[in-house]
Image 1 (cartoon, rainbow, N blue to C red):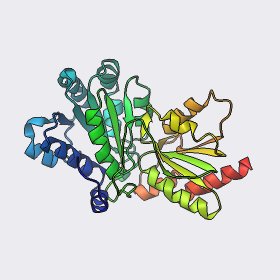
Image 2: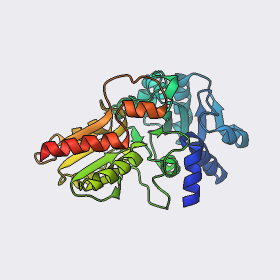
Image 3: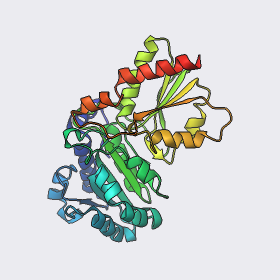
Image 4: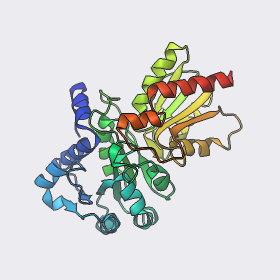
Length: 324
């Protein structure tokens, strides 16, 4: 497994999510791990160019045919071999939803779908390429694990863990080149076990994907206002780390932050778990509202959707004031 160091974390950050995903697969192949990678005519966009060159017998380009790709991946996974099937997030989750449901959810085959460029990073390509509903789609299908790494270092950790995990997984890749660093030193990554990155007593923030770094920045700003904020990397959205959530119930406010619609994503998953509990803090769900955002630069759309650190901190301050 690729060793995590500060210099590597900086390098991986510059390369971005998709390139690092491809590097992680290449590293596993060089170590003799048995798996196949598939692409819907997006070998370069998937970060698989070097992998295809060095291990052509283990890299299959299915063309622009995600539905067929999932069917073929299911057939190849019948003997238990892990199959990583890659395409842009809306195509692999919604275009191929029926095949994902049957081959991955129902048959529980060892297929790992990888949603490239999820969230808003596809920028000017517009809503046809934005992955803003993918978690809600995949989370609704039984037996599928959903993982959303916080940064490129966690992508490396997640790919290794997913390859070992028996059963279907959806890996959601957010952010692009210049992905902010969250992890720069070795740490333990376990599917289904959240990671507390910052302690706090007033507010608890559970975030996933790119929003983990943003939540940490917002927590710093809140600290300047005297609001003590705990930040949790909820990298596994399904199954949720409910033990971690139980430990957050003493806070005045529980916040979920995600680069995804507020309908059906991390916030919804947390709300579903908390709903039967008699004693629980109010929950503030921060994400993309029930709209299709206007296409523009990544930074423009994050601000339009209220997903900058300043905007998140302001919403939390307002919510805290309401609970006072």
